[in-house]
Image 1 (cartoon, protein in one colour):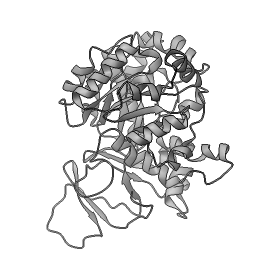
Image 2 (tube, protein in one colour):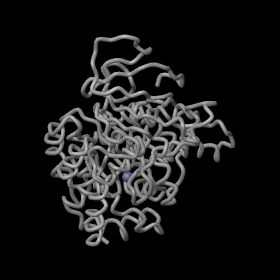
Image 3 (tube, protein in one colour):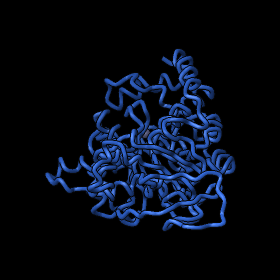
Image 4 (cartoon, protein in one colour):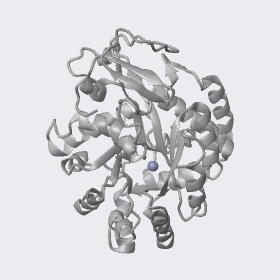
Length: 408
Ligand SMILES: [Zn+2]
């Protein structure tokens, strides 16, 4: 992922890690459980979904007629009040099935019932980074406990401080979150400047934008970042740049909820830390990083009248390496010896990947989930040729269908 060159060769994994990557080896004393002839297909780091609400799969295509405010208050909050551990568990598994089929090897997830979700993650073998979901309606008390428990739960699971958004979190609670960030010297993430109304409301309440407010409160003193960043001012970008904070883009969700278009090119011009997420299935409704990466590359063309406003390889890096570093997975960022074996295989025989004029551009501009041939996490193949090794799709569909009746 240093540049867009592609190397021919061989890759070995040993348990959860990459043990060799380089030119093909003619002879070795090593024995392998399995050898795969990749037949000219492409191995690359897994895609990282750096902002999502996994179990919101329950709300896919349920309320597509609202802008953000009405969507949250009329369609989503009343139904989320009915979610329980069982529904979170099964709808998380539905999301994992979607992620694995789309080459996603880890997610940065803000939602509820984290213990039930963690159980689903470990059973699936999925690398799940939880983000705190505190706001004035709940989650504040649990923040510190989650930090301790989920960071010691399983190597596949971790937890980073976070809160829902400025408009759902009062100043007193924001100050408590800042205290936690200082106590643990920990990063904090939140939804930020997703809609114009959110920014206008914050200016009315505090006389400044959410990024300025959080910066003033010391919330970002140990890093972190924000999801969406659609309505950032130049000053907001300066704060994020100065502190090395992560801006996570969610183009599909922003378009669908009529929130706006993030000027991705402005973040790249400043050489800021960027990552990409799908947001939840209720507001997207797909959980495809290919669709996100396409939009994050082309949408800037509209404002700039420049067909090369955003470099496709920069976006591919944001969707892989950037996402990993954003969510604290420093061993999942690239394919190299000693790194975690979180690897996907792209099927170069798919029509959308041919001809091979430029493989990176094929991935960004013409690929979709169907090009994913294999998804490996922590050295285990969880998805291969359309089949799951740890998920039973029939069971997931049956359980989600049953639970859906209570929620809708
Ligand atoms: Zn979100």
